Every structure is written in C-alpha cells, then in structure tokens.
Amino acid sequence: MEREGKKYEEYAYVLDQMPHGRPGAPRYGYGRGVIQLVGETYFTLLEATPKKDAEISLGERLYVGRVGRTKVDHILGRISYDELTATAKAELPGVIEEIIRSKERRFIEFFNRSQPVTPKMHALELIPGIGKKLMWQILEERERRPFESFQDLQSRVNIPDPVKLLTRRVLKELSEEEKYLLFTRPT
Image 1 (cartoon, one colour):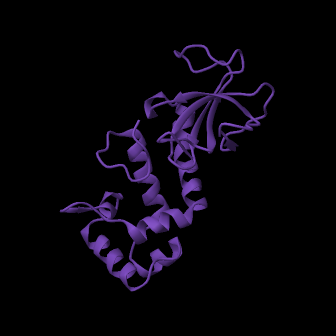
Image 2 (tube, rainbow, N blue to C red):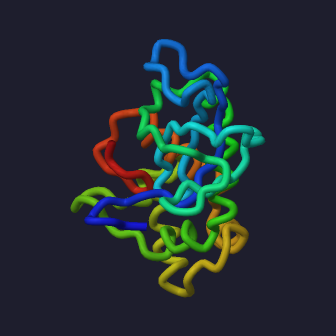
C-alpha cells in the first residue's frame, strides 16, 4: 500500500519475539516486549509491540496495516539487518523463501519482464547464480513464450532452484550495501 508516496507493508512474518525488548534498545512496549518482522511485499524489516495477551509464533503471518490489527499494537519502525537478533537472522532465509513461493506469479513476472539496469548489465545478472549464459537462455525462452511458473522456468532453462536464487538476492539486498535493489526498498 502507498500513502503520500511512501510504501507500507500490509502483512509481515514474525522472525523473533523478545518478551523484554531488544537488548541495548530503548524500552518500548510497556512490558509487552518487541517482535521483529519481515514484510511480505517489500521485505521491510520491522519492529513492533504485540497486543496484550496476543499469542504469536515464529513464522506467523500477521496483519500490520494501519487499521484493524489483531495481534500487533504498534509498529515501532524499520530496522536494519544488523539490528536483527540471531534468531531473526536464522529465521529470515526460510521466511523469505516462503514469501517467494507464495507470491510465485510476482517473481515469475520478474523473469518475464526484467530489463537491463545498465548498458552492460541486465537485472537477471544481479540474481546470484545467473551469469551471461543463463541470462541469454532466459531471454531467448521468454521471447518464445512467457514463463508460467518456477517449474516451467526450470524445465525450459538450465537454472538451479529459482526460489533459492531469489532468496539469496533478497538476503543480499537486506544485509549488504547494494547499488541496485530489485525486490527491497531503500532504508
């Protein structure tokens, strides 16, 4: 969802919950602790306070939009990858993979529509494991017929598991200084 040019997450997945807040961070939540989340649309890393007596589990998908939250009381704000707990960092790859699988159409469209980012580099080459040779195979195959699924992509192009490759790219965008952002938004 967008408001005044800003992009907000509607849903997010729980990466960790800290009943007493994040060590070293200001005390928020009035005794309710803090949860760390990753957004479903822009992979935004967030911290929030849960509602009193809310039962929350790791990996759970929660509504974090403006109105009608049932388990999240307040969004404290965006955080960086480095501010994630060890548990959250361990959960993140599996959650990203789950998001990519659940939004297959969106990510297949990336393979069907991506364009060059510079005169010498295509957006496909920013995906770990895709070099010039695979890029050209993908471009030739999508010219013949758009890809319909990850399975279709794998069967027509000699590409390793596209979900794992996309997960590695999202993790790279979240954890490193990247010039080109394909799936996340600038912090």
